[in-house]
Each structure stands twice: as structure tokens, then as C-alpha cells.
Image (cartoon, rainbow, N blue to C red; front, side, top):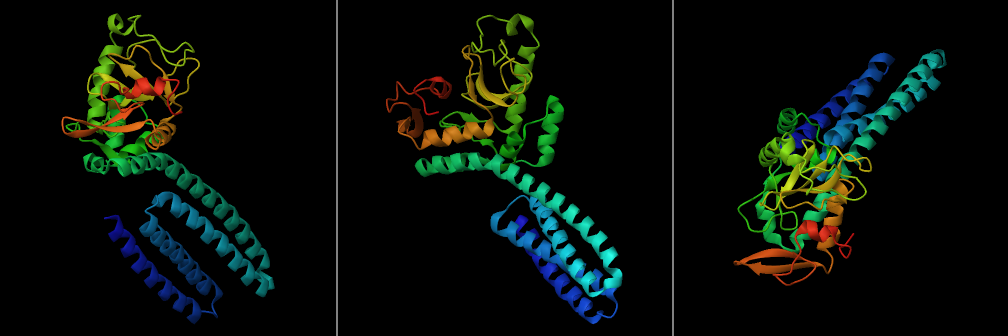
Length: 332
């Protein structure tokens, strides 16, 4: 669908460029008409660049659009200045237009660059991890689901009363969990929850969080540095992967006094020893990518299916992911 959009825009942009260039050339005697036609042509050139870039790299349209509009406005300012120099009686108006166009162009370009950088950062480490994992276990690529739509994420946020961090949104826009029927999940053997499964698991955890008899159980301690709340569950902990036995890795939006919102933690039925596993989701996947490429990553056969072992190639001794990540000998 995106390719059809990009190709259609390219064809339309080329048509507009040719049409308004001809109009600008035929109206040289009427400067305002020629300038207006030239401006439309420049904007169409920006749309053409945007569409070609999107078709080749599939970048996020919003950021690319803002960036290109910034370039177009700055280019337009240069053209207006040159026209003003050839028409001294209009130089003051030209300078005013140039200043406005340069300021708007610079702001638009800066906003576009920031948006592109944020989106690239959000997706890069997940994609890097997938690439590293698929090199060693290509069959896992078949277990991943296609991403959800923005409206699906907004609906989940509304039901939970939480705002997802940008990295989590980007993750689900890219992929919506894995096949939970497979023995080996995408997150180093743990299963990557679909958005619906995330919501269901969160609702169960919220019930526990709302029950003080369960949630204040002292056996569920947190780290000595008090970076995680001392409780079994919290309504602001968002699970995104599970071992299928009531244990999760998720995003902490309500950290302890020494913690940071967005940090990645372990929690659940058997996770009394909680820890901060990464400062955020992007750093978490960066670490998983390093582990996948390290000598601590092993593949073994279990019931006729490949599974991931961490720290050892012994099927009986391989670490559970959270135990491995907490180990002082793990890849940091």
C-alpha cells in the first residue's frame, strides 16, 4: 500500500513540476504570477524528493516531509532574494519575505530532523536484534506478526489509562508479537506479547496490584537501590514479553526513588528478585543484539525444535533470560 502511495505521488509531482515550470516561464512579465508558479513547482520538487526517499528507504513520512519543507523554504528564500536584487524597488519586501521563509524553513528542518532521528532510534535496535537473531535462527522470522495501526495503540492506551513510551509504540507498529504456540519465542526464547495479549496480561496484573493482601506480600522484594517499587505488581508496569508461566519483562512507568520511568524490569509470579535490566526498551534490544552475537548465545534441540540457551550449551543448565540478564557474568 505504501509503495502505491509513493509511486502515485511521484507521478503527480512530476506532472505538477512540468506544468508550473511552463506557467512560470510563460508569465515572466508578471512577476507575482511567475513567482507563485515557481513556488508551487519548488514544493512539488520537495514532494518528489520525499516520495522517492520514502520509496527507497521507507522512512517516516512526517519527519521527512518537515525536513524537505524546511529545505524548500530556505531555497525559496534564496530565489526571492535574487529576484529582489534584480528589482531594487522591491528589495525591502523581498528581505522581509526572505527572513520569514528562512526562520520557518530552519524550524521546519530542525523539527523534521528530530522526528526522523527519534523514529530511526526507536526502530533501529529492535531491527538490529531481529537481524542478528534471524542470522542464527531464520525460522523465527516466520513466527512474527505484522505491526498494528496507530489507532490500535491509542485504543490500548485508552483502556489502560497509560501513555506508551515512543519506543513501545514503535515496536508494535513494526511487529505485533509472535506465535505463542511456538516453543521458542522471539525475545531470547520468551514470547513477545501481541497488543491484545499485553492488554489481557496487564488487566490480570492490575487486579493483583489493586489487592493489598497480595500486592504487599513482603516476599516480593526489589533491588537494594530502591529503583523499583516494592510490590508484586503495579498498574504502571507494562508487560511486553512472557515465559508463559506468569513471569514478565516489561516497562516500568512508576519507578522507585532511584529509578527512571521507562526502565525495563522483570516481575511476576516467580520474580521476587527484581532488577533493572536496561534503561529503556531501545537499550534493552541493543543488549539483546550484543548477546545474540556473543559466545553466550547457544542453540539446542528441544522436542524437535531449536531453542535458545544462554551462558551454556547444556540444555539442563541454560539460564532463563531474566536470570541471565541479572548475572554479573552476562553480556552487558
